[in-house]
Image 1 (spheres, rainbow, N blue to C red):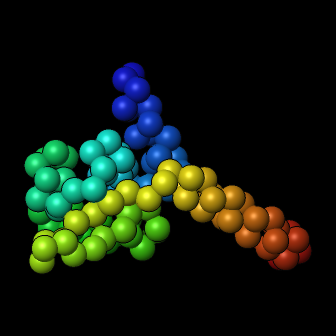
Image 2 (tube, rainbow, N blue to C red; image 1 turned 120 degrees about the horizontal axis):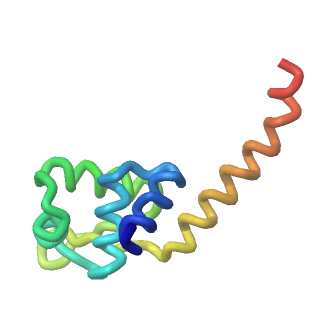
Amino acid sequence: MTKYMKITTALEQLGLTKNQADIYLACLHYGESKAQDIIRRVKLPRATVYLTLEELESRGLVTSYDKSSIKHFAPENPKRLVQSQKSRAELAEQIFPELKVL
């Protein structure tokens, strides 16, 4: 198994879909990019890439902005993924006592 495949699998275990993992990794690898460049790199349909970028943006893993009337996407620091997982774990711990009594 390649390093890329291991990272993709780990991201999937953290709750990302395969497409989200692939696109997020492409964003991390290439940095700020136009959607067109991301589409070419990940070889997924245009609509899929745009939808997935919106999903990643809602998760706080990617940001978008207009530059010369062209939408660009930039990855957030991977530490955001760690912070998100910590928040989820804390929430699970908070509700655990209530779940236990059900």
